Length: 111
Image 1 (cartoon, one colour):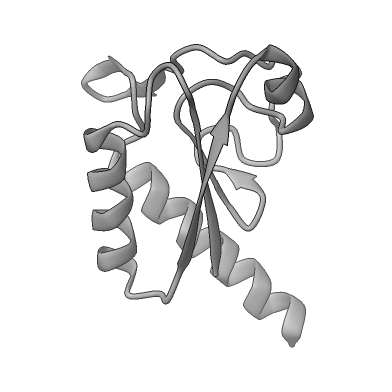
Image 2 (cartoon, rainbow, N blue to C red):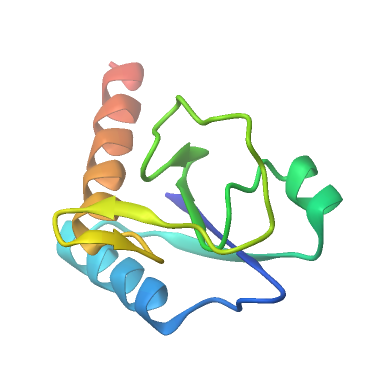
């Protein structure tokens, strides 16, 4: 499974986001290839459909918005809505749920 971890040059990758991603992959037990992609400026953000730093996509599916991504691309910090309030990174459960949903869709498509 391919996971993209997009981040801005200004904010970096973020230890909390990387840890949440690691925990999610570990919890699902799914083999995943993580590609780290740096976004350099607002034009690059538009080209890469970057919703802010960090943006994590599983096989192209955003971990927060799913396939209903907004058209508001920006190169600054992204905030995720969580049970603990707004956080500058997704929680491991959001990421793991997306991994499992994508895996389920891929399995259904193969049958």
